[in-house]
Structure formats: structure tokens, C-alpha cells
Length: 256
Image (cartoon, rainbow, N blue to C red; front, side):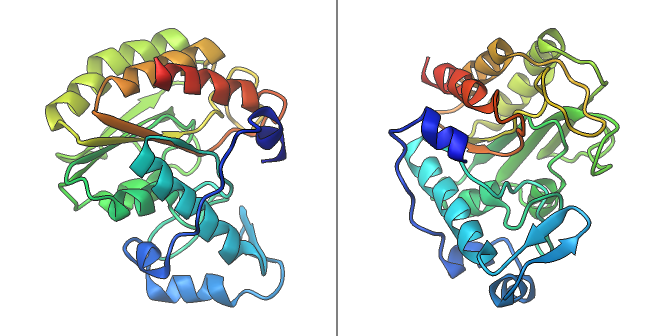
């Protein structure tokens, strides 16, 4: 976050999400757990939390809500797309993009997730919701082990990609699968779970993708053409030296 603030000094701050916003996606028991934390703890093997986690999570979800309403890009931590209704997972506490979708007045919303990992939490939250289309492009196999091509219904499309996939593969599946599916759904709002950990210089365990800055710019440009209102929420992306330039490339694509 420090690197992003330095790179984009014109950032505006967002109001935190309300408890009502959060409870549209998460169970009260789980919310109370996050609210009650009084010291640093490991909630699971990949998610740490502390006495400031609830505040940070509310601010991240609130930024996602405001980005959706204004067509912006929510640069947030913690990320969200692994968070399930009743528990945390994979660095994620609240499912920011899901909270933003449920808080919005649009009646047909599409979510395109290009993070290198499958957004299992977002998929699960909207699995039985015909008003939200969820589309994910992700490395396969990889954490969290979900997102196979057989996991689909009328409003869920998973596009698992082999390790080593680069811009050309992403562009091809976007043209052949993602664009037709989203256009047929005809969303009023498209939210992008914008993870940058599929970048060629990312260094995460078992991650092996080859997307470039130009690739993310083009993916953003194509997403921007799919709905009258488009917003993005930051998910993964952990190469601090590269992340600001990748976010900048995506911003250029969204604004073309």
C-alpha cells in the first residue's frame, strides 16, 4: 500500500463499509469473530489478523463500494476474493468485490477475476444468485484447488489456464470465452477482481504465468468495453517493485 500511495499521490480515501453492507455477504458469527480480535493471531495457515484487522477490512470493502459506484479502482489491502461467507482464506478477510456487488443498485452485475488464483469465495457467494455472473481466468492447478472447468452453472464460468500462459493465451480465451459470455449476460455493472500475480516477474509459491504490463493494459481495455459502468478492486500482486506500474497499465486500459 505504501508503494501504491507513493506512485499515485492523488488517491482519495474511502469511508468504511457498514455492518449492513458486510452482512449481505458474510455470516454474523464470522463478523463477530473479526470484531472481537484483540491481538495478532493466525486465523488459518495463510491468514493473519490482529486488533486492527476489522477496521482495515471495513475500509477495503468500503473502497470497493465507492469504486463500483464511481467507476474507479479500489487499491486495497487486505484482498478479498478467497473470503467465504463464514470464514477467511488466503490473506482475505472480507470479500471486497462481493460486498461491493451486493451494495450496488445495479440488477445485473458481472465479475471478471483475472487474479492468478481462483476466486473461490466470490464464486461460492454468488453460486445461486442469477443476478451476478462470475468469470475467472486463473492458473490451474494452484491454490485453492477450486475453479476447474467442470465447476460452472448458468452464471459461473471458470477458465483454468496451464502454467506458463502469457498474453497470447489470455487474449485468446478472453475473445473466445469471456467476451461472449459477458456480452450475453448484458451487465449494467462489471467489476474486475484485478490481481496482478499472474505477472511474469511475480515470485509466489507455485505461480508460473507470463502476463506482461501490456497484457494487463489490454485486459482492462477489453473489460471496459463490456458494460456501461466498470470498476476494479485490487486482489493479488506481491512484487512491490512492479505492482505500481502494473496498476498504472491497467488504469490506462480502463480509461481508453
